[in-house]
Image 1: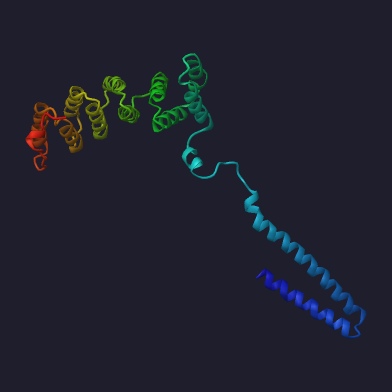
Image 2: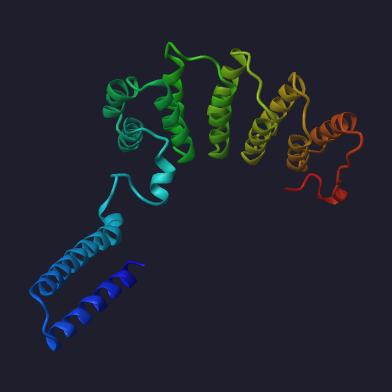
Length: 261
């Protein structure tokens, strides 16, 4: 629309110029046409300026935030929390600098920043640092037992095959009268079975049966599959499964694979 308007005004001025060159025109008409030409020049200049602002303005403006997936992944973490995460990873193998960094930077974080640091370390599978931050968190005045904090940390430890630390956190959770959910039981049982500790897996199974929440099928099936080399333990779990879930079925492999790894 703007270009069409400019073309119309330009055509008017061109016709006026032709009329002036081919006819004898009074002085007032000449003055009016000159004024029109000057006005057109002003309109063209201002229109070009506005067009440049529209086209270039978006590229020139930048609000300082990173673009793309990097920002979307970190936009919920404060600058201090990000600094602490990078510092912990930098000094994690330095026995002298790491305690000083925790004392000077980790302990000064606010509650939400400290939780964000813990969550991000778990996501990055820095489980040793996550466990250290969790223990720091437990000493804070605002700390209250939270099953979800335990759940995420225990699952991260189990997936990293840190089963000794899992047992430590498990006992700490029980002392605080917290009960895990089915996903936590499943991951811990799977972790002990894959680490070659069926006895510890059975201990977690007994805790699950005594939990106030009703059990679910998945941890039973994980345990039944992992106990194939241990038929006596598997038969016990199978009997419990059939009593709790009478409408569900269990696949029993051929007898010759029992006892074989």
